[in-house]
Image 1: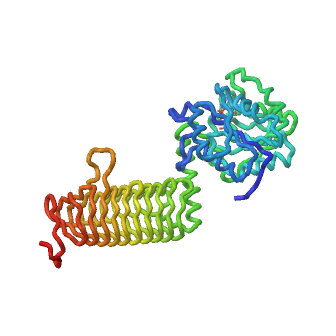
Image 2: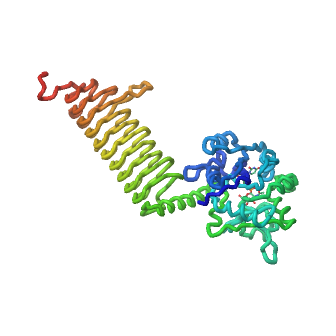
Image 3: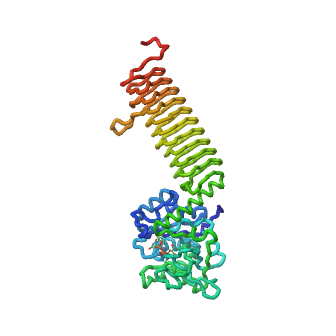
Length: 467
Ligand code: UD1
């Protein structure tokens, strides 16, 4: 990515609209692609440009939109559009804040629901406006299905000049056949904008203030530049107004993410079945098998084999780890561990190196020591388990007695927990202690002792003097 600084550019993201067609209680710009809200994608595309200001016009669901941006994108400013009277009206709300601000030469207008625009295309648009000296430069794309987008009307002779933009609802039959669409993204000379923005009048047909009227004003003066998106064209320009388009955009993002990872050395035998979130990290020579979801905050090391049918969320995974058909959330797994099939590692679990978790193991807030093993069917919650511990099939830490505070279990190094053991927490099992098959252990087991029976009795080590 090119590092650029456009200190004299202010971005305005229009994000106040109702998003009626989404049929949702969530503001449209907070719907997600690859685990990140649409608005976040737009803000991420802007970040490398180093703009002077970034301002989001909020309206519908303003508090939620603002709370998201405040939490993730420091320095974002807001303008409130109380009534959604059109894109021109939305920009007027931002103008009230930006006009007169020293040092802003260009205003970059973006749509909060057009999340796939790239940093490179935005830089190209700013450059086009500057190099041509145009009052307004716009970004256009070719759409196979231009339905509901504004169409670009060019002069009939050379088709070089953009004359105006006509909205779907205002277009005649011939205009509706035009496949070049308005992306809604513009770079506008700031001084010219402050002068001309107040001249937008409400559309006689819809009553909306069309931002696109600015284009006609600039065209009259012969000062319009158009940047046509290249091969990525429509995929980059997509404006999301309903959930079918949301899914189309998701497919594009997933393709981009998989490609980046494969080029960085990750193997995916069937990439179309791998679902990724933004910002996940995966090391070289790791293989992601089909049906695998790698979500928010996950970092995976080198030479791992993840999947098939695995979900990782907030997981930190070391090198040479194998995870088969399992779900790991907000947990850490060190190097050379194997997990699954059918394990569920819930929040706060930490697995040390060389551990083995076999079939149907559930853990929660559990620290599992190096080279320890839990091969089959167990629940280990709120437990601290040492090194070289063997957890027999069917072992349960009974950590919940109906009161809010879960009870802790500690098992020291080298302990051997027999099959079907119930460990009634709070409980401490000493170093190299053992439990017999089916024991229900209510009392702490001293180091080297064996707990047997229901409720379990503690038997001293065989070489002990105790009887
Ligand atoms: C607009 C363009 C159209 C273009 C399309 C690209 C106008 C008049 N038309 O269509 O040429 O092809 O975008 O997607 O500009 N918004 C507000 N306040 C409002 C209305 C909209 O903030 O009062 C925001 C929405 O939240 C959304 C964006 O503007 O993020 C686009 O809104 P939408 O209603 O989809 O755009 P159109 O006007 O239909």
